[in-house]
Amino acid sequence: MRTPRSPRETRSPGLEPLAVLPVFVTLQGKRAVLAGANGGAAWKVKLLAAAGAEVDVYAREPTEEMRLAPAEAVAGRVTLHERDWSPADLEGAAFAIAAHEDEGECACFVAAARQAGAIVNAIDRPHLCDVSFGAIVNRSPLVVGISTEGAAPVFGQTVRARIEAMLPAGFKAWVAAARDWRAAVSARYHAFAERRAFWERFTNLAFAEPDRAPVQADLDALIAETDAGPRGGAVTLVGAGPGDAELLTLKALRALRGADVILYDDLVAPEILDYARREARTMLVGKTGHGPSCRQDDINALMVSLAKSGKQVVRLKSGDPLVFGRAGEEIDACRAAGIPVTVVPGVTAAQGAAASLGLSLTHRDAARRLQYVTGHDRRGALPDDLNWAALGDPSVTTVVYMPKRTLPALLDRAVAEGLGPDTPALAVFNATRADQAVVHGTATTLPERVAAAGLDGPAIVMVGDALGRGAQSAAADLERAAVSG
Ligand code: SAH
Image 1 (tube, rainbow, N blue to C red):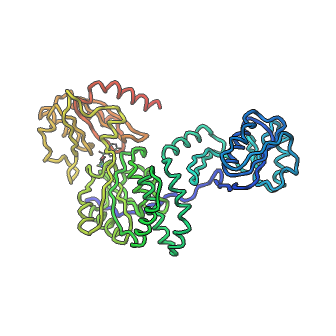
Image 2: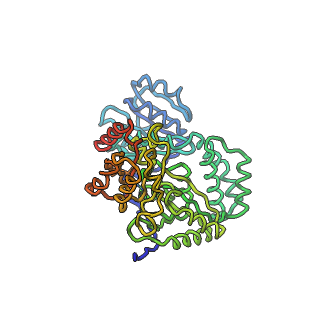
Image 3: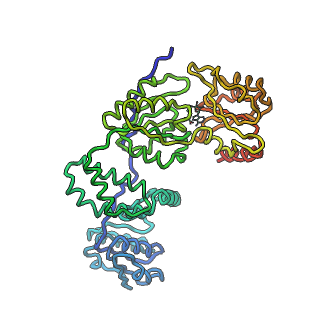
């Protein structure tokens, strides 16, 4: 008899050391000065002006690009003075940039600018800078700055491109509306909890409908909902996918962002929890194949009692929650307690594994049917009520979940029931994770090859003629790429 384990609260690590402190400088209507004319100068001038600064540029020999800057300013103002700077030019400057080719001249300007009380940057001379410029994602008033502290600018640019893709262009309008509505909302709701409830609803709506601009009717509806009182607790069963965080759905991300409490299984990859809100409680209600588990009844009771106390509970399960996840019992427990419950699907292990290997699970000639079976019954033994005729059917692709303990018996019997002994079979360990590993074989040879490989981690087994069709060479290529990459 295994001792059941109890749900255990887990904590995300606290603050870690910061290479730099990101701060955002307000330059609207303030004076900025740039002296010199090196290669990066014109762009910096345009940036300062875009942030609303009144920029004076002092350059004896400005570049052609710099000459165009006054006409190209999208906000603020740029004035070009075709002469060297003098200390009096720095009077009242909030921000100053040294852009000289010569180090000595830069240092001299930096000293004078600091004396005048300006925040100082020197292009390509980090040792002279108070502050540095990062890569920018602009959805003003929403602005994201990215720094690698000069360590890897190209890397920073790629991160920028990722964030660009993640933040719909329409967020610009939503954050602008938030700015315009802020005063009215604060005047209406004096209690912090109510204001927060309003802004949570607002944010959920923005994420749900990012591509349209919010209108007065949205404000009215959000106020009506907030006036109607707090949302009751609810449970969302969320599929975390097989491991790779990029396989999360946008709905899963939103549910994670909105959760007060997340109850998760051992099989959920740790990096998935990074997408939760920082303030969310996370609890491991571990259920692995063979180790001690929390009792399903305890998990159900915990989930229900948290939701009853008004919490938004996410029950985060590996893969798809409705595939071999005992989701039915959890859904029933919620319904019985009158708790609203919804499900967000995820990429199941079979789909993740097949995709990562570039293998089609069906084939017009080889597999017209696809079946997912479990290698385990309640006791961890081979289920005696498996449909053996179906497992022996040579025109099927079978995916076995939880195959480890019973694989030899399962494949033996399938072969005895008619499956070709040479049918391609493979075991995929840790599918879609950095340590994914594949063992190839046939219905006859796979069990001993898996035993010899001595691999660890969750695994599925896939068997069927479709797995040998055409795709094999592609799979081998992908695998090679995965090993060398
Ligand atoms: N709901 C999950 C399955 C849960 S049952 C899903 O849809 O994927 C647990 C079993 O899933 C494991 O024993 C293993 O067979 C399989 N599994 C889960 N994650 C896996 C992964 N990353 N790689 C291989 N198999 C995995």
